[in-house]
Amino acid sequence: MSTRISDTWERGDPYEQYVGRWSRQVAPRFLSWLAQPAGCRWLDVGCGTGALSAAILEHCAPAAVTGVEPSDGFLASARQNLAGRAALQKGAADSLPLADASVDVVVSGLVLNFVPDPRAALREMRRVARSGGRIAAYVWDYAGKMELMRHFWDVAVELDASAARLDEGKRFPLCHPDALLQAFASAGLGEAEVTSIDIATRFASFEDYWQPFLGGQGPAPAYAMSLEESQRARLRERLRERLPRNSDGSIALVARAWAVKA
Ligand SMILES: C[S@@+](CC[C@H](N)C(=O)[O-])C[C@H]1O[C@@H](n2cnc3c(N)ncnc32)[C@H](O)[C@@H]1O
Image (cartoon, rainbow, N blue to C red; front, top):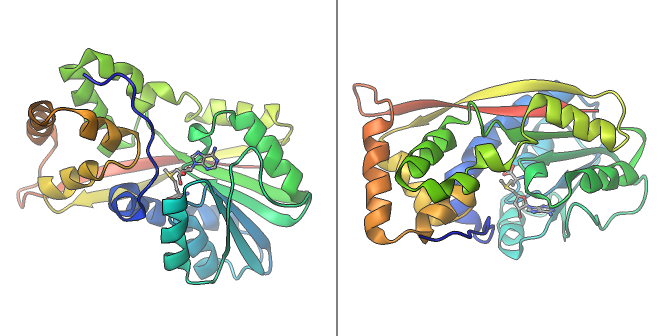
């Protein structure tokens, strides 16, 4: 079995089906928790296909929105989705292509755990934020209530013990309230606050749940697509047996994000 899988952020459309659609539901709740005034200059780090930037444009009456993203494929989707309403630039969290103190609010959705050095990224966010500005992020609760992925990895590890080290619940200890607070403190961001944001992730059928894993975008889909056909079929059938099902065949799960602000 494959032992090394990259996180794979290349194609926007399958990502939207897998996680983008759920990030779009977390984003407005996160923004209402931030409660920033109108007229701010916003930066969205790791903007992906534009889920959080779109919510900023819709709900926060910003003066400007900049999105920074390393993936060409995701940037192309963001350009299409945001249709000229945000300035999009290629770049990474630890070397943001922005001047010092050039924005009022720096946000990042579902990214911090993927950057090689989250503290360096947070220090960089601090550099580009004006004094007294806001820095905030959200990540999935991979080890707990991000249920669509939790079920996936629990079954994957049951069938293939070597998948344990790819399990995002284990790979990303940062995705816990205490670890997030500690990361913010160690980057010199001062007093931070954490909250949970739960959204309902309802799938019309098992196929609606399973199909997005076949798009190969993100760690769990990349793992699924690294398997041989027969192994993938075993994983699919075991998940089909395990997932809780309503009488109409739908599957109602919860996805929890941890949000942090300073
Ligand atoms: C789960 S997606 C989240 C995308 C988007 N923010 C959202 O909420 O849908 C993770 C994103 O992090 C980006 N990413 C990975 N490593 C990064 C880095 N070092 N700096 C900035 N972004 C990074 C990926 O390209 C991808 O767009």
